[in-house]
Amino acid sequence: DSGVTQTPKHLITATGQRVTLRCSPRSGDLSVYWYQQSLDQGLQFLIQYYNGEERAKGNILERFSAQQFPDLHSELNLSSLELGDSALYFCASSRPPDTQYFGPGTRLTVL
Amino acid sequence: AQKITQTQPGMFVQEKEAVTLDCTYDTSDQSYGLFWYKQPSSGEMIFLIYQGSYDEQNATEGRYSLNFQKARKSANLVISASQLGDSAMYFCAMREPQNNNDMRFGAGTRLTVKP
Image: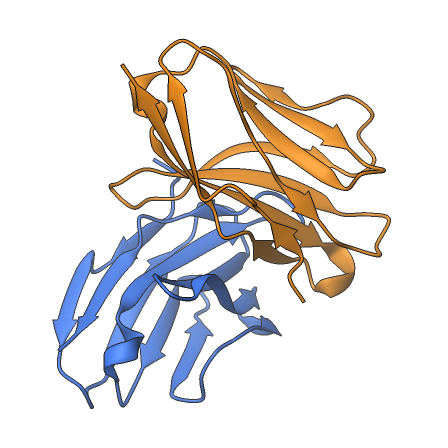
């Protein structure tokens, strides 16, 4: 158990819908990272937050957004969902520049 | 540009044997970190081992060791005494402090341990 929690574990929704994925980092970690893992794209970095502020952006679509709250938990919002958004979404946390520890992931299926 | 290259999509190893998973990387930074993660079929990403670019000794964690050859820009993972539970995907990753500490992952190697 990495200490990073993610909910929900599985999510099934329809195209055009909006979903929110939630992540709670390890105790004491100020940084949260979001990744998308799909079969054709591999593991892709989406976005990083540090102590409530956006720190870095990767290959995140404009339909996706994230935020980190004062209690350091983070949410990833995915809107106008497409079939191609089906993937495993990971959250990781760290005390930069230390090792990133990953949560169990949320498997999103868009039908 | 691809920064992390794992050239072995799949590997097989006999139980109790050692296996080396290859990883090469590309960076112009002097300071960087190299990581290996394991992803079993259940899906979670498990941190295995870390090597800093300035570390003179190769990192070891139990049955895992990292064969770090800085001049060749390679960071191969060696798993000794393979176990059936080692069957999984293995990802090499690099963190570059000058790139906001972003982590870049390789495409992964699927290791299958045969009984």
